[in-house]
Length: 550
Image (tube, rainbow, N blue to C red; front, side, top):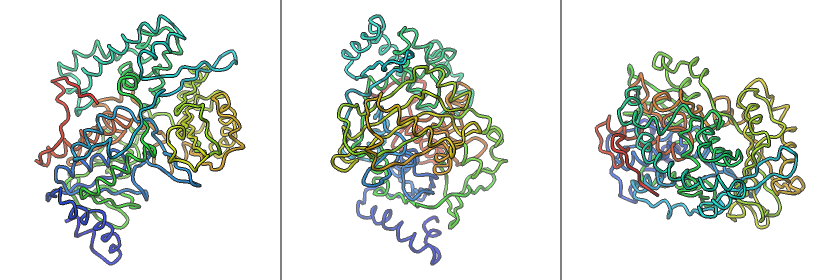
């Protein structure tokens, strides 16, 4: 049994005591969850792994998470430096419905566990001026009357089409959501009559920009409704038109800031999982998955051989598959195949703690380069750094006073850049690109930042690769082109094996927090069905379209 193995040997005594403190003692205190004899190991304590643990524990499964870092949350975690707190990765919290339902299955209320503030404006969009003048500005708001007026300042005709855009995408989401919330195992799932009926609506032959041309003639407005494709690590000129639902979700359901940052979500999930009896082994890297024939039977770490009835891999697929799954069990996903897949862009990050608070700058600001297409070509094709990079700045201290000492603030600066390649030497290029980014901040309303920096950390694609084991430092996992969606992504029930399941951005439905949480629901439902255990949650039946609202 897993618990017995973990407690064997003097060298493991401290680990065993830790498990008892965070797992068994807690469950004894609550008495709320009865564990079954079925045991599952989850590789990785990112949001997908934590959501999987909560769902499995709610069904009575004995769960252990093995995490190589010394804290949970993966990229959705917070680090502290010099009295400042920063999220590593995600800072937008969208479409809370999926996570609310996961919390509900665990007997919790998300809004009570994680205080959040809905943002208005949701973000400020700045469009670079090709003539060299100041950028034009659009304040995006969930108030649809005010949003129409904001669009009208750019194009009165486009403003008239805003409600049509919302109505069409409301219908598109309602019809397609069951497919996003269902497993796609092979081409037969794609060929279902219900899916084929959707083809005219989904129009996979149209790019996101082409889709938006049905509503908006002004290029700036189209960019304002398509920059969200960065969540998928793709250009709006290559991203499938289906993903017009991303901006729709923002205007329909809102953009939220969890107090304490998005890391507050995974901290809450960690605490709840432990209260449900989940054991979390930190600073322990999984070096391989054990198999009997095709059946996953556990994992190997430098200190343990852990056995289980099933395994969920929440680690980055493109790296973890090569390291953990024997080559003969992944012929469809060989090293060569993985390397040939399209991977997303990466990001250059600056985490700054500064003196003073820019009260006049929005919580989120997105600057879109004057020559946005050239910026994208530099990222995706030329694999070089742009002279005028697009960037995103989070000025969270205007909303959240918990992130910085009094009279100070945090600035989270992200510039999309090419993923790891020979075209950029980050040891050489980081100092120059840092200055370039700082030079652009005054145009965003952030003045004299250099002189006010009190804390600084930089993360490059090389850092994402080394610290978070991201393939080529690609922060949004495998790209979401048509040839890499649905059944063409690694399956949630991993093909060619038994009792091995995938959750996270590298599997179906894809990257971004809401869909990562959805991947956990899909993977755990498949797992529980295979183990013959009743689930408290269910994925939607794709043959019966429906939508639950937040």
